[in-house]
Length: 170
Image (cartoon, rainbow, N blue to C red; front, side, top):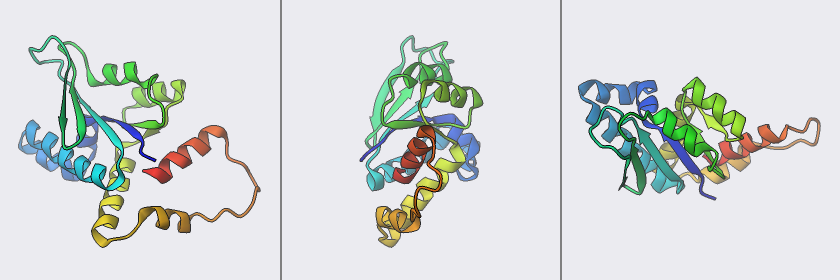
């Protein structure tokens, strides 16, 4: 079942060694490299992805949404950061997660009951999915074979079960 992923775009770029190389050339190159990888990931996993970039320094008075490769790309309005935009939308996020390494967003997401995934963890899961697709491996079968339940020795908390379920579907 597809998830809804809300991604802090510049945070993911700054945390990724490979994307930072493109970002060092210019801001647009970093964004394009991220969007290309996300589009490939979306084709493999089918998740609904929204990427948010800061637009606070722009001349646009309203936030701008566009679609690229099946991904919704949001540039925030003048005077608004991506963090503020994301936190405002987190309460409405059902069956999904926020992808960021920003401590403020992660803490707020936990308060409203939305799972968060660090940028590094997400990049690893994205790379794993893209590699499996390239090699023709079914990730869902691989995940089910990897985790073998051995009985009710200790039941995870509801929060931990939700995060485990989400993690397996990424």
